[in-house]
Image (cartoon, rainbow, N blue to C red; front, side, top):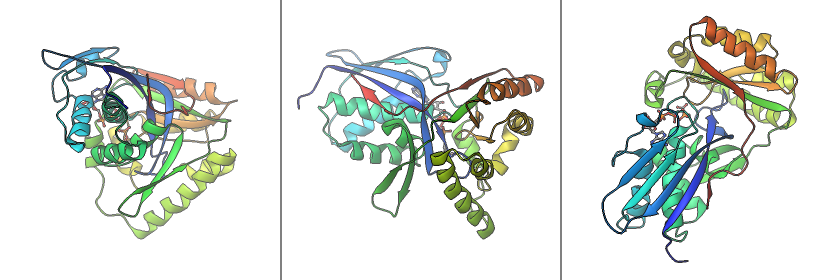
Length: 304
Ligand SMILES: Nc1ncnc2c1ncn2[C@@H]1O[C@H](COP(=O)(O)OP(=O)(O)O)[C@@H](O)[C@H]1O
Ligand SMILES: N[C@@H](CCOP(=O)(O)O)C(=O)O
């Protein structure tokens, strides 16, 4: 295929970890960033950002989307073309909804499209995982759906995790940021055998709970001992929201990605009540938030 003069890529938000699946499972959500790349014959890099919090995105070569774009060209050992980049932000920044994953996947997919799909989707995925350092947000951002990723060193096995249609993700997004690096910084480097066994069992149960919609399994499965006990202190209102969500009928509540967004899973009958309860709980803490039910994106990154 031949090179093209411009491309637009949309990439979905993600909710990673889902409680016990730290660094290995995540789901794409119907909330999107859009990235338009146009080759320029002259001048230098131009980045224009629109949408809520647009002023918080870098507009020089340090921009993560652009860095991913450059990474692609380093990989194919070519010089990147000069481009104009237009970013339409739909995914809030540093909230645990995979904004960094959208940028990494968006930059790589855009470059691959501009070069006539030089790399396979699997090669793009490997580059994205290497850049992000873990697979659980970039993989669903690229492929869509709920995905489990495992590696024994060389390549990644990606498994599509069936998600029962009655299980609704409710996201409660506060108006403060928490960077993934800060939230990873509070984690211990070693964990006990008991905690490792706890998470292994709960992740197995979660997979079956998501597939079947079995509420009893999901209630037990949405627990974790590897990251949330250390991170919850970074999120004011965590315990209050947990109580509110479960009292309103949610199966359980977890931290979305590295936080601070909190994710409840509920059935369709209870999702609206869970939304209202989580919003009220954060208001009581004096925190402004947006709470909404989202459905799963099944398509991942799309280019046109
Ligand atoms: N659309 C974007 N374009 C460029 N950089 C972005 C974009 N979205 C996020 N980023 C970068 O990623 C950072 C947030 O990443 P991170 O702390 O991992 O949070 P998140 O949980 O949202 O992925 C932002 O501060 C910004 O540097
Ligand atoms: N497993 C990672 C997931 C980070 O996701 P993000 O959406 O917050 O970027 C972690 O928990 O650190």
